[in-house]
Image 1 (cartoon, rainbow, N blue to C red):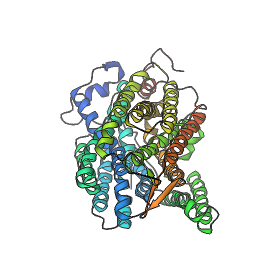
Image 2 (image 1 turned 90 degrees about the vertical axis):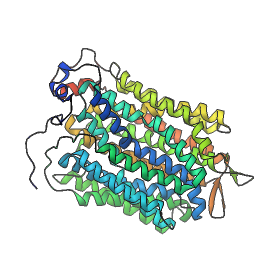
Image 3 (image 1 turned 45 degrees about the vertical axis):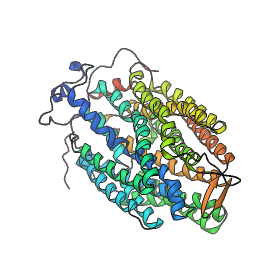
Image 4 (image 1 turned 90 degrees about the horizontal axis):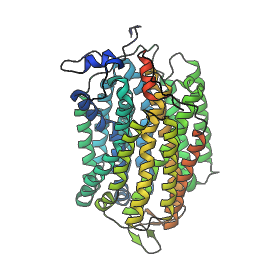
Amino acid sequence: MSLSPEPAPLFPPAAPGDPDAAGRLAGPATETARWSASELRRLAALIWPGQLLVVAGIIAANSQPQIAQHFHTTQIAWFGLAFTLATIVATPFAVRLGDMYGKRRVMLVLAAAGLVGDLVTVMAPNYPVMVLGRVIGGLYGPVAVLVLAAVRELFPPRKVAMALGTVAGSVGVLSMLAPLLSGRLLDAFGWRGALWFLVVSTVVAILALLTVPETPRRAVAGRLDRVGALLLGGGLALIVFAVGQGRDWGWSSAGVVSSLVAGLAALAAFVAVELRVAAPILDLRMLRRRSLATVLLGSSVPQAAFFASQAVLIFLALFPPIPHVSDGLGWSTTHTAVVGIPAGIVTFAAGVGVGRAVRTTSPRSVWYVGLGLLATGLALAGFYHQDATQIVLTGVVTGLGGGILMAGQQAMIVSVVSADEQAAANGLSSLLTQVFLALTNQALYAVLAADSTVLRGTAFYHDTAYTHAYLTMAAVVVLGLLISLAIPRLARPADVAAHDLGAPPAATSAV
């Protein structure tokens, strides 16, 4: 396959009926702070596809208690892990193919594959088929990465940080509305009703992507690194499997030890292959730069804890109160969604606020504030989760920290990479977040299972299990904070984006 060696323009060619194309091509000198109608439409069209991964996670988490009881399985963790592992394997391919063929085209293919997986999942006659459907559905996962990379190519430099903050922070609104609707479906029609909502949501995402302009193709040499991708996916799957089975089989059992050793060996081989091949599936050489390595590691670890902690609330709220068996609150899914509305509002507001704050403030400073709030909120939730008032108050603190983290991560990535590296950096970020999320989820289920009672094939959790789970997630956020302390001084995203176009940065420097 031959690819043009000429560098692609930062912005795509003007599309028919795109009135702001001339303004984008003219660069920062002619930009205004005003948003054109076409820019607002484009931003709105990117929000749903970009956040459907999170929405799907919320719907799946809300459905898990009913699914576990319906299929009488204690292996409900694999309902989410199968999706996560498929996303991990697919992301490197998606990033490279997006550069080669255009991100919109690749996103549409991935969304169509995810739709097939959603259909298999909702119609599954048994739990193994359902897990298979989740594997196929996980192919949608990289769409979120490509959406964030596309933002940098579809908006003028001065508006990139705000656009990224809006797309990332919109998870607050969606995580508020999706549980309300899916909750009513769960209460009225059971878990299949909620999963049918996910099918419809994927169709809406496909329709939204059809309205987005195509992004520029970038010259990429070499063939796809299939060996590297297989080593990465296989190694991670083995390690996650070993962590998940450690408690049931015993950490010193032959099955767990052999899986761990084989997984670590595969990952070691993956690193060796990626550093040797001309066109690696993941350019690990980028991690030699301290700024990028610390930003990606420091942001991926706490984000994994934020997403994983949502599962704790789902089980706490939806599992029934059974003396000496379960200390759940026994709420309906709709009531749980209503209680989560304040947290969703502040999460969205935080994302938009970060987009404004990083115009004049270093994204690193904003990031530290988010980490502190998230760790505090999770720690408080560990001790105060007995009623709706406590959950609302701790949820607001946690949601505020989580919103700052998701938008702040994108601002930091823009600050340390060029436009050509944006997709690869987002791919590495997503990969690391998904890896840590898989491991954190397994650790979380192990903590919950340590203080549980199995009744009719379903594991129910005691109050101390929820306390330990929240505190474990807070500890993971603190680990992310310690890593983040090594992040060097960062420029403001607008200055970096302006530099991509050869324009002089603003006078105010970041710290």
